[in-house]
Image (cartoon, rainbow, N blue to C red; front, side, top):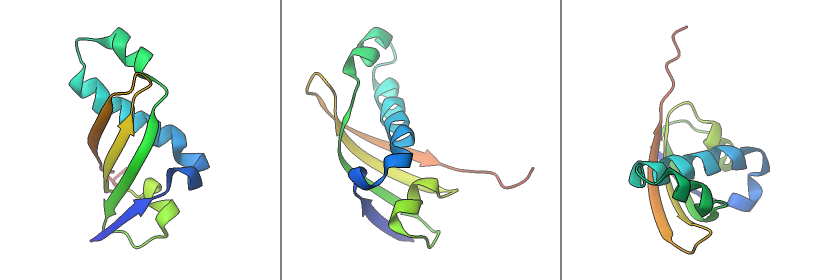
Amino acid sequence: MMIMQINYSELEEEKEWLDLYAELSLFSKWQANRDGLESAKPFEMKKIVVRTRENVESWKKVKAKNAIFYISFKTRCGQDCNGIIRKTTDDSE
């Protein structure tokens, strides 16, 4: 199992995915307040840790087929948040 902290500033191409993961984790907490979700963006990523079994370079871990993302971020209104997102891909087509 590979665990690696990722530097958000080095992931220009994957920033949309990481922001989506942060939005998903915040949505699961604020389901009843969808308007508040929009006002919380943009997010300030603080820490991103990716856990995967794939042996790839750190900046490619965001694209791993199966991974767990531990994300620490701050909303625009200053609230500190943590999220855990599990990404799984079924290879059968």
